[in-house]
Length: 219
Image (cartoon, rainbow, N blue to C red; front, top):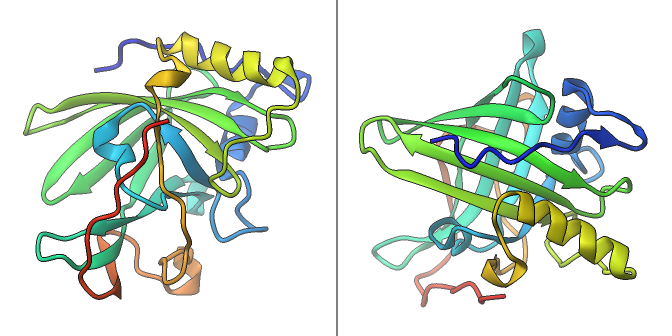
């Protein structure tokens, strides 16, 4: 599904948003940090349950663009591991909108992503997505608040608060509906880029012995 299709960000740093500047927003802090963004909170509890969500957006050869989320999961047998997935990203109909596709356990999922807003200093951004698995027929959507370190952005006066709320409103999301993501460290996370030799799709790395699952707090 691609509805609702909230309106994307139209201007950034005083200039009309282009595909290139939209991709720059996604790339975010990558280069200064080994990730682009960390997820602060989101609308979809099935996804936002996973702790320590790192977003890695990067450009490839021949104008390719890629997205690798890295997050921590607890397996059925109680092991705590890192997981990394690998999405191809293609530009959609207008700047600020993109199609994401991923092959997961033999099932292709297609998602429609929209940049709703981003602070000029990259202290925070708001993304929306909707998608479906091609075989399973599963449909889902969500909204993400992201920042450099996974902490809530500093609300410096009412203007920032209004901007965040207005961006979420475009997607029909209220701040009280968000599920906060647990961010308690990146140790052992597979955060390298392809040129560094790090394997991409379906990477797992155990980080510690079995323990009780970490649960995300509700904002």
